[in-house]
Image 1: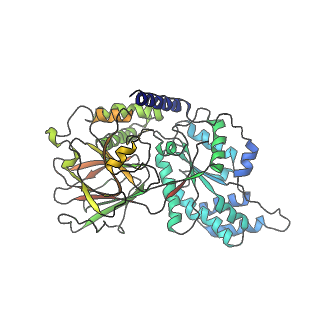
Image 2: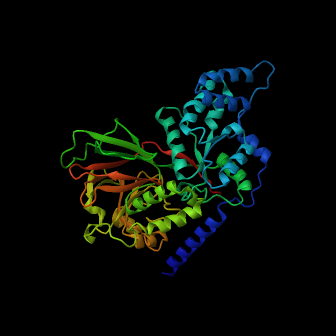
Image 3: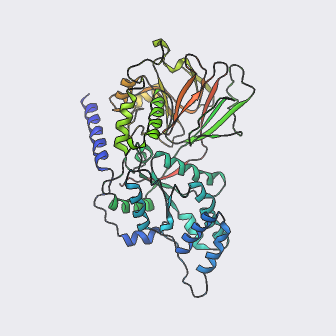
Length: 481
């Protein structure tokens, strides 16, 4: 008992220190000139990439190649660890524009892309294609630069996921290697950043820390990260306000190995997206949805991570998470009244239905050991409990995802301060939710912090199917040994 309390106290103290100090690499002195030499690409490559993106034409690269290798010109040499940065300059409060300027100072200005100007898919389609074009023309410097490249995503979890998703297209297109990604945390929760050693907040000593971050991106070890494909199949005709991470699709279909109980509508609407951290259904998503719209309507309220968290906490108290019932009858509050859950368990190829406890008002599927700003609601489970439940130790690259439930606000609060674990439901390699309207004709959902309101029908089911993306993302680990 004492050791548990001590561990919780230590965990809380560590979290507090991290939130105050951000992250820094104390005692590490890095020469600005040496860092710039190691991560900056030759000028002709920087200019070729920029022009290819601006003109959306990779053939413009030939002109820069001819000038670089003109008679009498010094043969260009590739950088040891060329780095490209994508920055969401609107994140991080007032520090966004200042950080952008600092990054441009430490490397070639053309290697820092503001996401309001250049989207990650544009860089993949034109910037990297430019290097590949030059390499195909016999430019060894471009070839090595392409092979050695590393990427930094400066923003919140949404920004990181956006960059990872676009880089993942390289794998689909057979354009390897896929550059590994490091992170500068500028968001509110920063759970992806925490999970890979980059800290949970933007450091106060950010000017000096930026050099250390770039150095670690250039030299840090590579870890792997699972990602999960989410498919929504719903009756056509219902209006769905899709978040950025979900796109309409006609190419996807449900797993035919699991039979559908009941008739399907004549016409379906399908939406597809990828997430890296979590997908949830229920009250937590409803609170996030309300907060999201409040922030959009009154952006002056959200001036940084701390104010966001305070507003979010206050807003959750007004949405029934703590005090008011979801319906007139208390027995209808649980998600089990509108939802069925099917999973493929670890090391199993067969679907099976899992009962959802009647007390659960939110279901979360979690990929990372960090949720809601550094908490671990799944908990650090003892080996004997893992064996009893048929679970394996949770990791971000283990090919399975954790499913847990939250009962109400008080239970969620106790879970989030790590006094107790969440309600363990299952651990799976594939998931299907089937929703049918009852007392409710809509459900709230969120995926990696992007919430939406999901219409559900009494006549036909809506299906949410989750399967692992067959390839993993490459992440630079920022933790110093």
